[in-house]
Amino acid sequence: MSDPRPIGVFDSGVGGLSVLRALRAALPAEDMVYWADTAHAPYGERGDAYVIDRSFTVTEQLRREHGIKALVVACNTATAAAIHLLRERYPELPLVGVEPALKPAAQLSQTRQIGVLATRGTLASAKFRALHDRLADQAHFHLQACDGLADAIERDDGERIAALCQRYLGALGPLGQGGSAIDTVVLGCTHYPFAQATLQALAGPSVRLVETGEPVARQTHRLLEASALLRPMGAPGSLVLTGNGSREALLGAARRWLGPIH
Image (cartoon, rainbow, N blue to C red; front, side, top):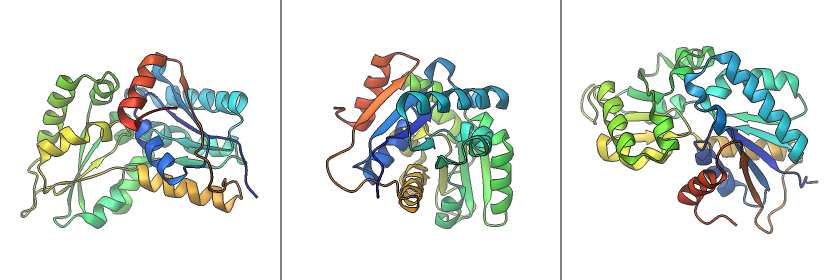
């Protein structure tokens, strides 16, 4: 059995394209619909009630207009605030969220000193605190809220991206491989992989940057397979890019970060 309906993917803007990139690589035969809620971005600097309301609204729209068979919440803030409520309201819909990759980072770190760059909303969430507390005996996590960085990436403002990356990496503490230096940095927002080259240049080659796209893609594949919803390999699946902001800006970001869009 298989199901030809598309997979829905949403974020507050273009950051979730980093997750979409991993999904398309892992599930090339699947049709996908990406919804950018740009008119209401950034989620990371909003309250939980606002993010929950937007998450329900976008999910309803994806179900009504596109008949999605599964949903990937490609936003750390929306996952933390709303995914448990989405699961309650839509028990029949396979749902995958994202969370900062603290566990993979703890497995990789040699110094047991890990930096976490994330939005203020993610770091303040109960879901993140629970994740952090579960792993607190495995490593020391240096948490840094990165106000403005997702917005700078959204606007493709290279000068501001570089300045903010430098500020927030510097605030984490010493980076490197020796002694008590931070040797691993978690990119805890789906926007941040699009600043990875800048972050890596500033952090240095000995510091490992960890993001969440590939684990999310693997989990989506497992859920679809377990529910007999996975499409067999064949022709490449289609991609619909939609949302409530500038279509040209969304297409421009997709071409910049995903390559040619057909």
